[in-house]
Length: 113
Length: 396
Image 1 (tube, each protein chain N blue to C red):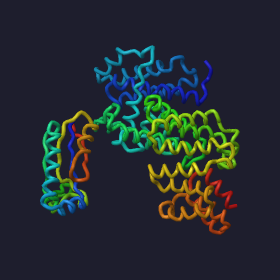
Image 2 (image 1 turned 30 degrees about the vertical axis):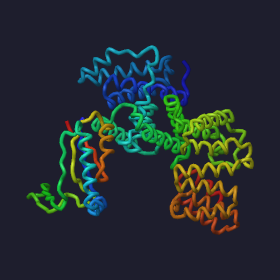
Image 3 (image 1 turned 90 degrees about the vertical axis):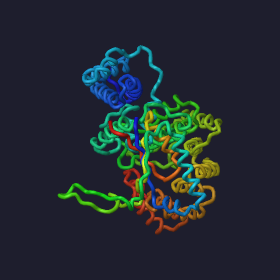
Image 4 (image 1 turned 90 degrees about the horizontal axis):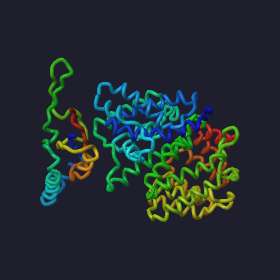
């Protein structure tokens, strides 16, 4: 079954990351790279997203499409990236997600079809 | 055939519904579809058996109904139909596969309310209407919970299997939590008198015993089973003729089932020998201290306080601290217990038992006005009729 793991940042996590020195940050990135390497056989593709400040939202439920600056919900938790994985079942997806070494929340969504 | 009693009917359904579900799921290859068939068969049994009597082979009877419905319902899916049509219910019982069933129903990706409803329906064979009645919620709510949970099992790929050894501990905690909640709901229903036709503590005991049979080396399973059995053993003495609560000091201990208490004590000792202590074993040990005392005055309060200390170490909680304070009153006096309560006032300000305990301690210290205020507060906070009666008596 295919799932998307959505990596979710929190304000606190962003602040912690910003507070790291160069060496610590390299080490943190190293752990993420290692995670991707360890699960390479299950990850079909993955992307990191730029900050929510760069987001633009289009609303189509009114008459004319309405374009606004920022993400569709202003919140303290924002999706910062995703990985699509192909695994046997939810338990295996959970196992992969639980070992994620970076941001503090991971949402697991099955892919339709 | 004689007309079966209510309890007998519940017991036979409970013994067979889960087995049937466990056998049908791999056969049909779909948790939700198989579960629907079991539910159909259970509904049919509850219609026929009270009139016709319980058949000699209830398992075969249920299977035949489920299979017939399955062939009907699964018309569109030839694969399922063919499998169902080919297989007959075995004359000898299959290896017990209900552990997979239990772990799937209690999967952490499902909300707790759904875990409970699903476990009752799939493993214990309760109907949706029976679950709704036991929890005093509309039938549509329960039906919705079950439908959503089954859809999630299939859409999100929740597996039908026993967790791997490295996950088993955490997953077992979820199963134990579900059984414990069921037991608590049955033991002291939050919002009704104990007149429901279904005693959830029976289902909790059945599940704990089943789990113990399937996982005989798990100390906490033994602890929970002992805890439930100790409560059952004393159930007859807990209520008076009018349904009023009789508190522990005033209970007629000759009404307790002393054989069952002794057996539960042996179970606790066997669990302790495994040297993996846990919250359920400790709670069972505390209840055993009460159950094994010949008279109220013989209660070993020092031992109880020690057990509460261990429990607080493993599973800190304000409610457990409250219970420790209640025990402490008999070791160190009401003043010491009252001091303990002071530290809990913030966490437990909406908990009726906190205020009822406070009232008792204040009465011991002859602070009657404050005691009365605390009892009044407790009365406002509980919705259980038997507890309300008890508090009203104290206020009268």
